[in-house]
Structures are given as structure tokens and as C-alpha cells.
Image 1 (cartoon, rainbow, N blue to C red):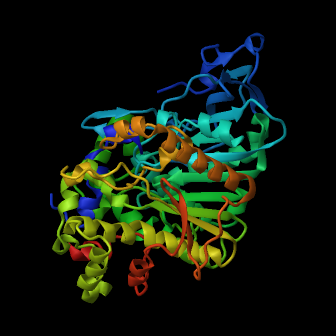
Image 2 (cartoon, rainbow, N blue to C red):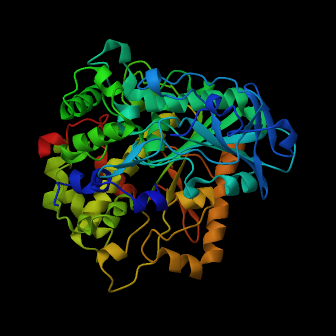
Length: 550
């Protein structure tokens, strides 16, 4: 979620941090388009023609890349396939015209108004037009709380990264919200596991990449999956599966640590809440609803939820099969021993939610009710350490620094430690932010927040969604362009070799790349704060310990 999602954020997601700290306040399928509406005749084919195992695909030249937009990786999850695992796509006759992106998956953006279509399991592919040989492949999974976002958003365009990194870049749509992440096995055993269908879509996309990406110049043996927020949580979940190296060889987890994967009980409780909101007792009732009716049911269900369940309502859960057990435990036991992993966060993750409710920056320590109960006797002591490291900042900003560490940074470092037992692992932190201006309200002086690294990684520098972002970009374009180019180079190097170009992370040194102007390497940054959490065993995401504290 970057510029587009910020402009249309739902209340459920926008309230995330406020809730955590106490709540102060259809497109046709390929087969249907065989009459020519969705296909190009062989006579019209020029450059940018791929020959896959399913049929030819005609892309379009866009500068230094060939863009193939709207290439199906699975059958449409419509009709009898609604709430079912993804099925393989069917071959198509003639040549598939892939010059226009498909709509994203259905998502509820405002009362009674949804966008997207259920026939949405498509990829966007950007292939460099220069150089020979098989190129590394980079598959991007967008964020959006598993209820927002689309691969066709300008923020997620892979052209710049593909051209600069000399890599084939793929962006994926996957089912969102109720359609992709609601566990229906409790009312019909035939739909057991449906609460992970969004994750199954992503696995299906990666399987399709392995099978077909060579037709687009990619190397199926050098696949990197990278994603941010919800996309990163899915990657964390996949790393805990059986033999993730069969899907990808490298993985980048951006602000989505594995502890945010749900427990089975959480998935069952969330599904029960959705079904109760619509008096649903059987899958047939859901199957009979229109897409808009499903989106309205989804919104109704979320409006009735309080606490952090609202912010992380949808997402992958530990089902015992696709995700056999708690993510970090699985990684520590070696589930991803054949995968190179890079992980990172932003310095001020939770400042992001001040874009929607400035009051999150004014929360006193007493409102920090999601603080772990087992650490309650040292809450004040921990606050004092964080405050001493941030002289002059108001209490609310100190609380947000603690919350960033609780939800994002420290869980990410725990995950890095687990993976480092098996394979060199790399850690970064994105520190750049719009410069502070004295005298402005706190909500106008935000730090390096959640999502802010995405425009730099993909090379789509558009900072207008952040306070004073557009003016800062205009004034500092050369420095910020250089920062973006260096980040693209690091991500591409990681995709080629498994190393982004700085030393790996070990519990002894904790070497961390800090992306800022200027860039720098640090061993164990803010380690005096990290160690304060050492006695806390982060659980998989459930209503506990959150619900017990109000």
C-alpha cells in the first residue's frame, strides 16, 4: 500500500495502531475472449512475443522493457471455483494480447462500493529488452492487509526495476478479503483450508513462474519472491512450509514478520464472525451472493470487530498443512535452509497510521494496552530507555517507537536469527524520511513509516502521499534517485546471487544496512532497546495477549 492505497484506506486498516494501543478513538476469462477481443492475431505480432507452454503471449514494448500485462496464472476462481483452491489455467488459442492490465481482485473500499472482479488471478511481467541469457526473476507480492491492493497499481510497476536490475519482474494479484482468507471448513468440510486460498493463489503464481517464466527470458532456477506488509507476511508463511526452495531460491521480507501469521483458532473465530454477520449457515448461501453482496458482508463483519482483530482480520493462518506450524519455530528448525533470506523494516513503522488518525502520535503510556502482560512490571522502565534515546520527543512518539519494535522490528530480528542458523541472512532498515520542520504538528513530521521503502525498491519515486513528500522529492531528487538506484541494485544483486552486497546478519554482530542519505552500515543499531524484549516469546498472531488487555 503506497500512494493509491493511502488515498482509499478503509477504516478497518486505518485504525490498526489506534486499536493496538487501546482504541482512543468482471473481466472476461481468456477462453471467453477467443473471439478476438482479448487476443492478437499472429499477423499483428512483432516484438515482445513469448511462447509459453499454454500459448503465445503478445506484449508491448515500453522503453527498455517488454510488458506483458494480464497473463493468467490460474483459472478464474468464479462460479463453482469460488472459495476453492486455484486451478491451473487452460491453454488458449491464437495469441493472447497482453498490453492492458486486468482489474485487481474485489475489495471493499467504501460503504456499498467495491472495485475489482473475481476473475483476477493474473500476472504483470516486465522483461528487459537488452542482453542475452536467462535473467533472474523477481516476483512481487503487494501489501494491503490482504483486503486492498492490486498488481496493476502504478506504485507497483516493475519497469524500472527490470530495466536497471536486468531481471524479469513479475507482479501478482491474489484473492483478497472474504473471498481469499475466510475459513469455511467449519460449516462445510469440503471447503477446509479456504482461509488460506489467498496464500494458495500466491503459491500457484510461483508455480506458474517456475513452469513458464523461461518463455519471458527468466531463469526458473533463480527466482526471488519479495513483498511488503501483507505480501511479506505471506512470504514468511511460505518460508515455514515444506521445501519452499521448490518455489523460490531467494526471499525478501519487507515489514511482514512471521509472528503476524494467524493461529488456527484465530482463523476459525474470524470466519465465525463473518458468517454470523450474514446469518450464513452454509456455503451455498455465500455462493449465491453477488460480489457486491460479499463485499458488503465483509464490511459489516469488520465493523463489528474491536481491537487488533480489526487491523489484521485477514491473512494466512497455521493450518497444519500449507503452514505446518508456527513460522519462526519452523524456520529455526530449518524449513528454509535452502533459501537465501533478506529481511527489514522501516525505522518508524507505526507513524504510517498517523496519516489517517493523528491521535496515534499522542497516545500516553497508559493507553498502550497491547503491551505484553508478561513484561508489565518493566513497562515503565522500558519506556524510560526509549525516551532517553529520543530526547525532546513527546510521550506518544516514544510509545509508537515501542510499538514499532513490538510488532515489526524485534519480531523481524528474531526471524533473522532463526534463519541465520542455517544460511547467511541479511538485514536492513529503511531510515530516510521527509525532514522534520520545527513548529509543525506532530502528524506533519512523520518518520520513516510503513510502506515508505516501496517506491525506492521499485524505482517509482512518487512521495506525494506523505506530508511534504512531493516538495522534498523536487528539492532532493538527485539524492533520492541515487538512494532508490542503490536499493534497486541491492535487491537485484540479491536476486542474482543471494547477497545484496553487505555482510550477513549474525547474533554476534547484527550487521544492518541502514538506507538513508547517506547510507551506512551499523552493527546492532538500537540494541539497548532490542534486548529489552529478550524475555518475551512472541506468539503467532491471535487475540491473546491483545484481547485480554481490553
